[in-house]
Image (cartoon, rainbow, N blue to C red; front, side, top):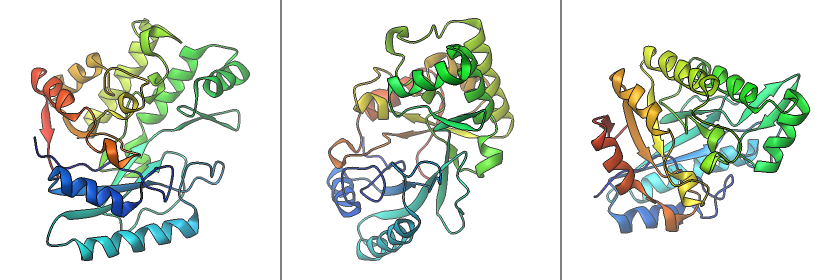
Amino acid sequence: MIRSTFHNHTTFCDGKSSAEEMVQAALAAGCPSLGFSGHSYTWFDESYCMSKAGTDAYRAETARLKAAYAERIRILCGVEQDYWSDAPTDGYDFVIGSVHYVRKNGHYLPVDSSKDTLLQGVNAQYGGDILAFCEDYYRQIANVQNKTGCTFVGHFDLVTKFNEDSALFDQDDPRYRAAALAAVDTLCEQGAVFELNTGAMAKGYRTAPYPARFLLERIRDHGGKVLLNADCHDAEKLLFGLDQTEQLALDLCITIIREI
């Protein structure tokens, strides 16, 4: 299916491909629209995000590409705004609201950088209670729309990135499910749009998209909507897994948003 895609990272942050390489891949795939979503600047961790100067360069390059390819594809300049970022979001075409860190005792604990880093944070700040870490994660993401003013919520259950086959915790545990479902309920009450995100599938961490099926069922029951994205960091995987993921959404009878 010909589709648009809006969650894409380039060499301006932690992506492997240039913005123009992404445009060329989108043209080859016949995408009507392509959204860039550089990671907003986070002062406490500059390893993955756009720098302040890089943010200006990113916006300038996206404007150049918009003009250069205006007759061939619709290009949008967005930002993936981390919950703890204080970078301004004025002037972007859209905002993705995401939680990449849990703040505990003054420490910003990375959720998705690596399994070892996640466990080190859980052991140091939660005494090894990973479900308590998950509960704090979901308390934060329940507020992500209020905090960021986002157009849609990014990779809702990112905390499960390294949990394929319950490697770290049981996703059927009542504590985990209660926290995750409560966050879904809160966001749905606010009219939030959730993305169906195949990024961890593209990187080999997961065999199913974010959010998990039981969360998608809850979103459906609330009459919620989803937007399909590959969270692309490599132009060769621009639309990775989206056909399979769309079928999942159709099977669950969830409303799919095609454009923003």
